[in-house]
Length: 175
Image (cartoon, rainbow, N blue to C red; front, side):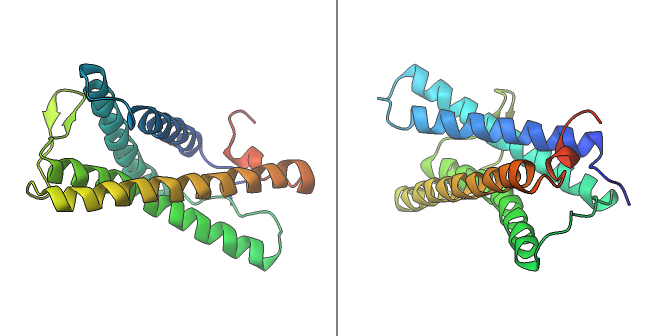
């Protein structure tokens, strides 16, 4: 059984984390801007980040299915269950959050053009009421992800500095 995640898993973990942070920060910043060419540019970038996170998450899950993760350190059963479920929820949100944004864009009548090159198909037709629902859902899912990420980081910090059980070293670069 490996003692740490593979370099590929570590790289994907941190790349996805950085992209999520960027997408959240950009979403927060752009949401209250007045309509302008800059706001439309930021929306495009936000969509690109979301699509990239989604694609990297597919790659991450495929990698995880083909590469066994290390055993967790010894911890109380409730912590192991909390960790398992928080990871499952994070993976779910990593997939569902970009999809909700894509659905919002489709219902709003604004296509998702990945990197300004590839127009993704609309998932649903234009509908102002449905767009409003998906906009709200996208925001709520974003806040849910933020809360889960805060718990994830808090757990990692607890294991690193209070438990000192080497948990963080499994998902860090180097030896």
